[in-house]
Image (cartoon, rainbow over all chains, first blue to last red; front, side, top):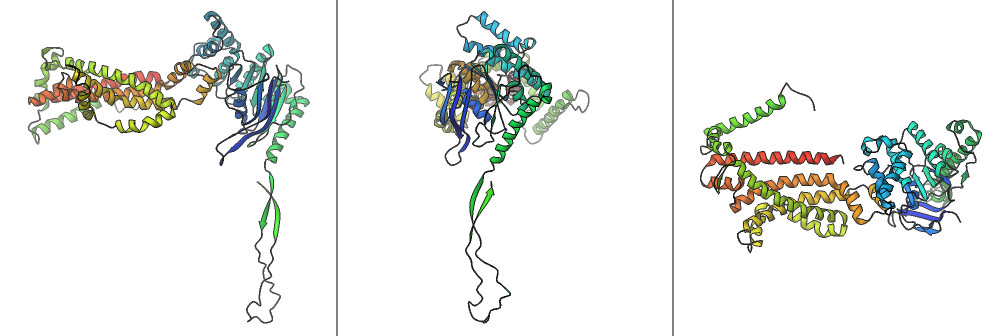
Length: 305
Length: 263
C-alpha cells in the first residue's frame, strides 16, 4: 500500500445550478520517499488538488489516505509551501519559522527550538536575513523562508504548490537546485505541483500530467528514468529528457484538444424548398397551384464545443 | 508632491491663510456683527488665560491649559472605555456572521445618534450615583459615541484577513487563542488603529457637548459659562483651543497609525 493515496477523488465548487466540477476521478499513489511532480495547465485545478492533499479542502467523493489513514484536516505532518509564500508580514524570518516550530514541537526546550529554527534558516542560506521581515526580502528569499518553515515542521510529506512560479528564471533555477539539494539530503516524500515540465523533469522521480479543467484528472505517470544528479545542461540536450518532455507536453496538449468534446446535435432544417422556377404551373390563377415542395428533414451533425 | 512654490512656503502659505481669516473676522466684527469682538479685543481679554495657563482662580475661572487638561482626562477615560468595549465587539462582529446579522442593524441605527441625545439618557441611567451622575453620564456619552468607528473598522479588518494567513494557522493547527493573538490580531491592527484615530476625533467632539450640557469645568463648560456671562472673547478663545487640541490629537494618532500600517 502506498504512503499517500487518492482513490477516485472528485471535488467541485458552487451550488447545484452553477456547480463546476474541478477534479473528477483522481487516482494517485505516492510511495514513501518519492518525489512526484504534477504538471498541468494553469487553472486546471492544481491548487485544489494541493488543498485536498493538505486537508484544507475535503473531497466530495472518493478517499484520500495518508499512511493508511484518511486525510481529515490540515496538519503539520504535511508541510505545505504555498504559491504566494503566505508568510506573516509582521513577523521576522526567525519568528515566522519559530511560530511553526513552537506549534509543532511544544515539548522541546526553548533552546532546542531556537537551535532547530537556526538550522533550517541556515539550510536555505538565509542566516544573514534572520531578523528581517518578509517585506525586506526579495521574492526568492521569501519563498526560501516558506520552504524552511515547511521543512522545519519535519513533515512526513512536503507539498510544494507552484512554489517557484512567481519568480524570475534565474532565481527559479537557484531555488530548484536548492530544493534538489535539500531533498537529496533527507529524502522526504514530496509532491510538487507546477506548470513547467522542465522543472518537473529536473526534480521529480515521476511526473504525472493533470489534464485541463474543468473535470480535470490525472494522466498516466511518466517515470523519469534519468539518474541523479541531473543537470540543467543535460535537460536541454539529453535525448531521454527530450523524449520525456515531449511525452508530457503531447499528453497535455492532447487532453486540451480532447476537452473540445464532440457532441451530436439534432438540427431541424427549415422545411422550405425554393420553388422550381423551371416548372411553370398550368393554372397559375388557381389557389394552391404553386405550392413549393415541402420536405421535413432532420439532420445530425457533429459540432465541437 | 515635493513641488515648492517658493522657499519657506510650508510656513508662509498657512500664515497667509490665517491672515485672510483674521481680516475677515476683523471686518465682520466692525461691519455686520457688532457683538462679535475683533481679534485685538479677543487677545486683550484672553491674555490672562493664555499667559497663566495653569492658574486656578475659581471653579470656572482657570487657565486655559488647566481646563484643557480637565477635559482631556475625561476624554481619556471615556475613550479608553470605548476601546475596551469596541475592540472585542468589533472582533466578534467580524468573526461571526450570525452575530453580525443580529447586531449590525441596531449598530447602524445607534451610530448616527448625536451626543446631545445620548447625554440626557446617561443622566437618567446614572441618576442613582450621588455626586457622580454628571461625570458618569459624560463618560457614557463619550464611550457610546466614539465607539462605532473602532467597532466597524475592527470588524472590517477581521473580515479582510487574507485566507492565506488563516491557512497557515490551520496547517500549524494553532489553538483558537494562538490564532487570535498570533494571526488575527496582528493582521487586523492597521484597521483597528484607523478606527482608534477616528474614535479619538469623535471623543473630543463629544466632550465639549457633554461639558456644555452638564456644566462641568473644562473647555466646553468654560465656553458655555462665558457665553452666559456675555464674555464673547472667551468663546473664541475656547473654540481655538478645542480646534488646536483636536488637531494635535489627530496628528499624534496618525503617527501611531502609520507605524502599524506596514505591519
